[in-house]
Image 1 (cartoon, rainbow, N blue to C red):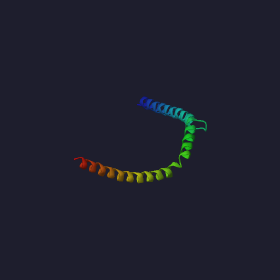
Image 2: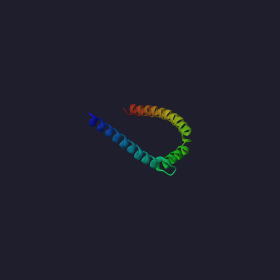
Image 3: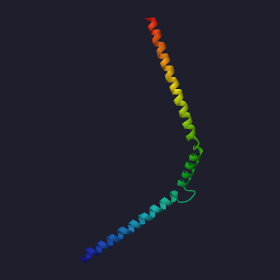
Image 4: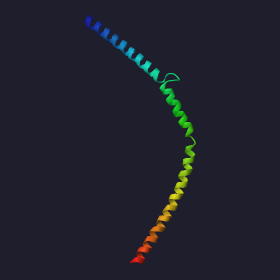
Amino acid sequence: MTTLTLLTAILVLAFFVILAYSVWKISIVLESIGGNGDSFLAKLRFGLRAIEMETSHLGPEVTKINAGLTDIAGGLGAIDNHLTGTIDAVVKQGS
């Protein structure tokens, strides 16, 4: 019984040592990815922020363009109706 308890305690201790070592290695890798200003993640964040700033003015302009295109779509619908009527009239004349 004492041997089993001692073996369990050693295995639990080994588990926590391995767990601590793994967490430490993971933190080293994560630190190299995004921990300082010249890391890959920092450069990516800087580039995405630049894109966001450069395209921030597009939102209001797209709304204006969308309103204009909606008006054009209404006009094209009227033209379509007119052409349909014209084609029907030509077909009736030919009959």
